[in-house]
Length: 73
Image (cartoon, rainbow, N blue to C red; front, side, top):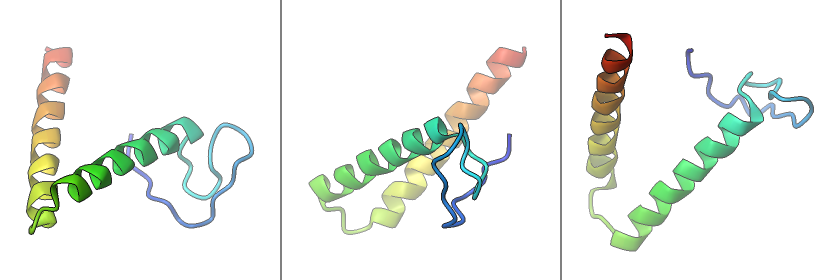
């Protein structure tokens, strides 16, 4: 599934946003993850938050790819 970012045309009716097409569950989970990342950045007050987020991005992609490989043999 390809990620569809917010288009600022949000709707709450039905199971999916008509603006971006994502499910309301996915949107809520993404908002929760984002909130956790921001709280972590604020708590540790990194001088280089971009570096931290790049590291998280690389680790998440690497781990995701490993899981996909394991699942598909």
